[in-house]
Length: 161
Image (cartoon, rainbow, N blue to C red; front, side, top):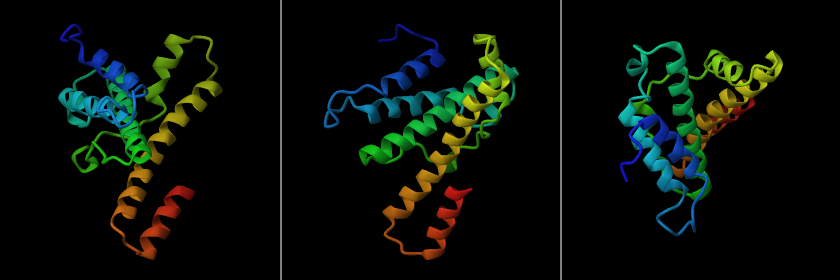
């Protein structure tokens, strides 16, 4: 509707809406919202490391967390709903999340957060992001109807690690 002009707020809202959807047969389903999120993320340029270079550390961390949330949501929705991935990871070079991406956010929003609790929450998000990349590879491998045992072994090793 054009009411909200802040693209970061729009991206956050669209990500939240991806958890809501009417019937999966409807065009207003989680995949639709993920598609909007991918479009907004690309328009912000958060899929590219260079576009975040001139930002302060806090802004960079927020956008990197948002990007990886979009990546995880894309992998989840595509896998669960049997839809194609909306993100081509070969077009993205955003750095993987680190503990530093969460430090300021957790301690400024919740000063009572202990270091151990902060680490558990941050590590969860980091590892979910890494697992979503492996999930993408598994789905892509399955869709090729390839019986390459070495690739299957490689994917199993990635999951084990």
